[in-house]
Length: 175
Image (tube, rainbow, N blue to C red; front, side):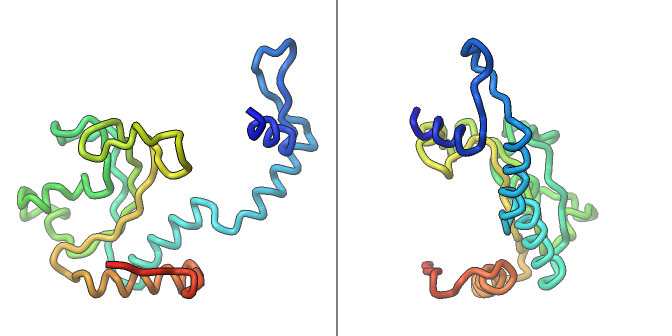
């Protein structure tokens, strides 16, 4: 209601003729949105690139492309619902030993995911807050026996504080 009206006014979005619900933006609004976009220091593409570069360049991980959101070779899943789905054959010991997948010791990926039910069913929370979504992207770094919790924690801290520039005093780490 009021919050949406406020945002529409702030961004110059007006309701179309005769209240049909169509929205349009004025030229001045387009320029304001362009300026607003320039103010964003960490758009998604930069977050994604920084994460992938950190693990591939600094920690010798192999970059693995995102799998399709509808898995091609996993009849147990209707949709890709986690970043680890494409690595299931490795975790389950089912990967062909001669395949590139089986030869991975470290991997980094970005995975488009859809959650629509099952173990990770977030549907009841979608729309109630800003962090439960049905379609989202996961960033992951994976070890297949190459490193363990100690290194993962140290690298996560380094990536967050050095590469992403987050203030150490504003972070609280738990285990």
